[in-house]
Length: 200
Image (cartoon, rainbow, N blue to C red):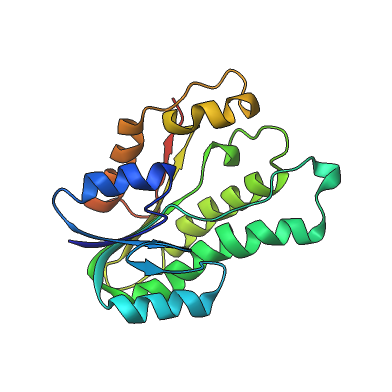
């Protein structure tokens, strides 16, 4: 398969890309580096990326940002960071990317445990994650050409544990093998409209 991985140079993306690279043709997209560059907060940039790479079999997005801050410090503009990047960025990848997928292709988005089990400072991030879960379940009812859309929602991954452990007291780090398998399940399985939760 020809697989596009947006965010393929990130903490999770690098491990996922390494796995899929074993038996597939993997293209890495990033904001500043990769086989192709893209800013998912800009729909024109998304369109340009797909025009450059042509037809593919699978899209995996492990990218998107949202502002972390105390609720009383979050401004309206702070919320728009997550809404434009992680939420609408991934929605636009589906909206635009479907036209560049071969028949029976797949799109895998990424969120995280905050949608179901938020911690402090995540009012914006949790809201965005929950919105993506609802979007995936709804769009799966309508998307055409045999395309499947799923989302992987992981807990705090092992490779980011030291960086984020203070934000997630008592949370168990998720082994990277489990995280990779969630993306494998989405890409190689037959599920559609699934929220693939990897929380323990």
